[in-house]
Amino acid sequence: MNLAVVGGSAWFAGALSALLDGDETLRPVEIAEDPGGFARRGGAEPQIAILAAGMGREALLGTIRDWRRRYPALRTVIRLRRLRPELVRDAMQAGAWGCFAEDDAPEVVLATLRAVSAGRVSFPFVDFSSLRDDPFERLTRREREVLAALSRGWTNAQISARLGISENTVKYHLKIVYDKLEVSTRSMAVAKYLNYAID
Image (cartoon, rainbow, N blue to C red; front, top):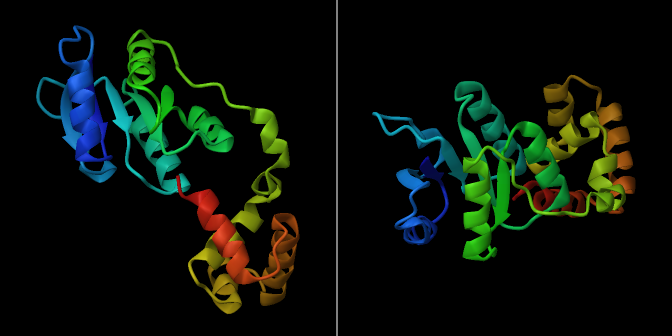
């Protein structure tokens, strides 16, 4: 099967090419610096794409969903900096076929790609029960929107205008967010959110 690598470092792409050298089932045919530059060209269309770009959580999941719509036959595998349970779960739900971590051994990467090429999903074991203790899992959709807006440096008035809610409602949501995240300031909430939102 033809394989594309999207994002990541030149070192990773080179190491992957070396790993697959001589492999009769997996052939690297395309490298793109970012998802926007990913294009399927000529007669060597990739059947598997490794999404290795370091990007925020929402951008990563959005890319998986977008590729699933645009290229329904494409099997997306993601390369994560770390195997965070909520990100593995959400990648599965978005339509990824598999994932591995940056520090996984070459044998693990190869086994993942071979499984996907054979038509099987391949995800590592993660303890999903730990999600019960994740404060971000307890945030409502609106609370997540307010927190994301806060992380962009918006004032309460700007959040109010962008989300179409009153400033008092913004303050109410922020109080709930602070309580759930166990923080007391905007900067502490933003710091926690950015650590969570970036893969």
